[in-house]
Image 1 (cartoon, one colour):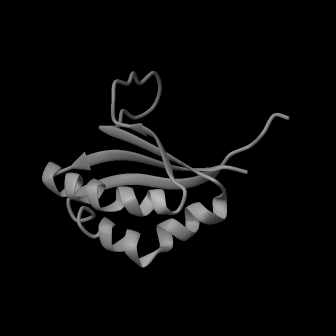
Image 2 (image 1 turned 90 degrees about the vertical axis):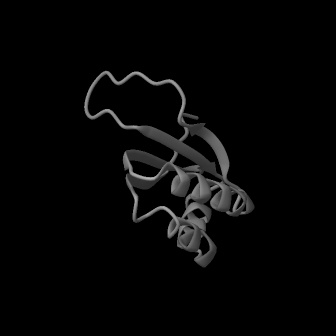
Length: 98
């Protein structure tokens, strides 16, 4: 079953740090099978909080998504932005209607 990283950004104090983070972690995430589905872009909020930025990555399965997030390489990349960025990040397992 596929899994998804969903990151909802509430505050970004340094765009340059966020850019360095993205440049650093994108190849790392892809090496774990991550496929970018959403990265910013136009959005409309109908209910609840409005977020500055939404990012969604698809992974082959939940275990691979967790393994990527817990990797030393990814965590080192997140260190570039975590002091100037606030986000809600979760990993969610997908489902099938079949």
